[in-house]
Length: 193
Ligand SMILES: NC(=O)c1ccc[n+]([C@@H]2O[C@H](COP(=O)([O-])OP(=O)(O)OC[C@H]3O[C@@H](n4cnc5c(N)ncnc54)[C@H](OP(=O)(O)O)[C@@H]3O)[C@@H](O)[C@H]2O)c1
Image 1 (cartoon, rainbow, N blue to C red):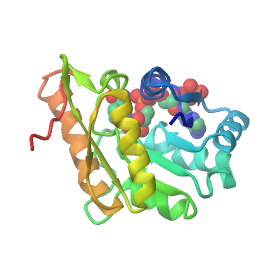
Image 2: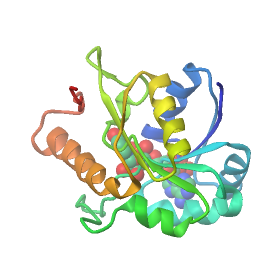
Image 3: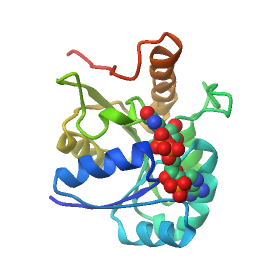
Image 4: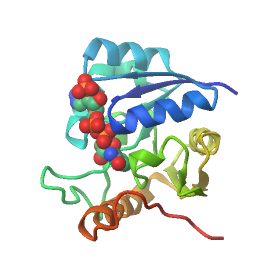
């Protein structure tokens, strides 16, 4: 079923998700940092993606305000400091902190373990990769798993929102493998089961 999806952030990640979700038949609006546009997109959407830098989350939340109440809020961010270290962990996560700041939204962690260039198709070198999805609200998590499958991912239920601690670590490992170990961004995780 086609969904109305608002994406806050229209950079590498927001743009790729917009193309992948639109190709799958969803109605998508992606917006940048203009607060009025953020508010409008959040009000209009059924599912809202946060695809802004970790340090811009508070601004985005402030702009969206109560338009997020009751909505599925997909946290795509990697919780990193300005010098590219893991900002939180291992006793909390960016997603759990986000849920505290937006208590009436249904936060789901997903997509952060995937490089942006693969978010449009869910594939790397022609092979389907895994999308790990963590959240506490079962129906919200199922919606995000379905959106991942619509794009082309192998969608994996990664458990409650608390498991975002490990997804954020895995996202950090992805960055280290790509850019410190120099494998490049043409890589992705696949859960064989
Ligand atoms: N790049 C990756 O491969 C990758 C993979 C997984 C997760 N992530 C995570 O995804 C997020 C976005 O990454 P990206 O690579 O897409 O970054 P990016 O290309 O720099 O895009 C960032 C977007 O966020 C918007 N933005 C900045 N401040 C904002 C604010 N206060 N309110 C609303 N929007 C704001 C920018 O708006 P304007 O267009 O108006 O400037 C821009 O559209 C980050 O948290 C990153 O850790 C990235």
